[in-house]
Length: 118
Ligand SMILES: Cc1cc2nc3c(=O)[nH]c(=O)nc-3n(C[C@H](O)[C@H](O)[C@H](O)COP(=O)(O)O)c2cc1C
Image (tube, rainbow, N blue to C red; front, side, top):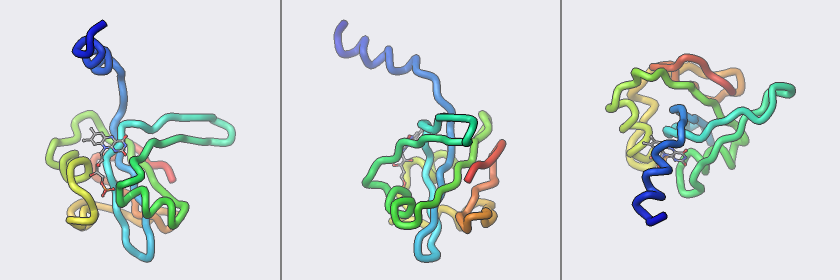
């Protein structure tokens, strides 16, 4: 198999789309991820893969808190671009969307969210 076929094989992996948010020192941030999956139902446990260079990773590491918004299929590209192509080091993403404060104090994005987990 040559490398271009390898690349095409990757395109067949299915995934969802989520916003993972966290907070540190009173500042919230979030990013797009496609790597949330359920580990167990009891206790309810999920796993997320986050690049260690991301600001969201820094906040999760410091606060040990995160929230996940499960995004609807119709989520528009500008929203995905805000959370997926820009870093919170450059722009305050949460100022530009509807959020609420979750039970752990973590900001939770509610725009385009089918459900949320903390
Ligand atoms: C469709 C899509 C899926 C993504 N999935 C992931 C992912 O699973 N894990 C990850 O660390 N970054 C993922 N990213 C990239 C981050 O969302 C991106 O690097 C973001 O700007 C990081 O923001 P932050 O520095 O504010 O945390 C994805 C981006 C897009 C557009």
